[in-house]
Amino acid sequence: MKPLSVQQAPPHAVDITHSVGTNSRVVPTELSLPTSASLRRQLRALRPAEKPCKISDSAGLHVLVTPGGSKLWRLAYRFQGRQKVLALGAYPDVLLGAARRTRDAARELLENGVDPAEARNAEKRKARIAAGHTFEPSPRSGLRPRREGG
Image 1 (cartoon, helix red, strand yellow):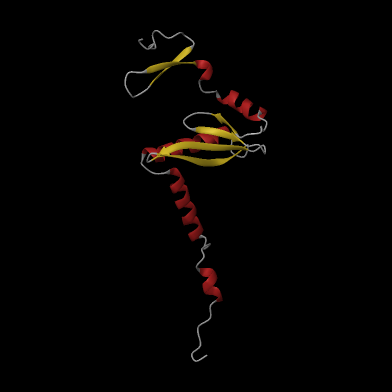
Image 2: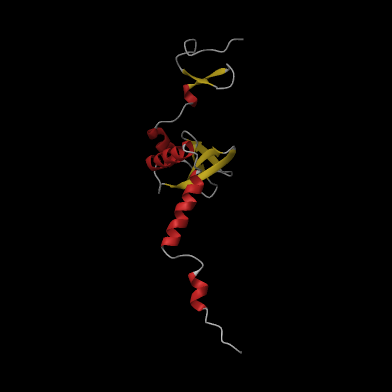
């Protein structure tokens, strides 16, 4: 059976073509990405459930709703063949636009061959060292020079 192409697809469908082989599938637009307004409405209306659930946005960005009621932005991505998740903050502290900008910046790092989580950790390390919040000064401040013969 020949797969449907965009021209043969019904008007209420979107074509998604896979890069492997000639397979393609048609997905109804009802399953397509939500608009900003509808996603904001969904986020406000979300209530905690027994199990954590995800509300997807696009390109790996989703909100994880925990049983405790937290709404947490997460970015799922692959780096060097491994699945990873980057925490972007809690909703409503981090709004949809800010989460999308952070997602875009992380995707740009991925295109340049840099792991966004490692880049974030390197920035935090640099800031901690610049502020003097390292383990080294602490022990040195309490050390006294050793006395001979005793």
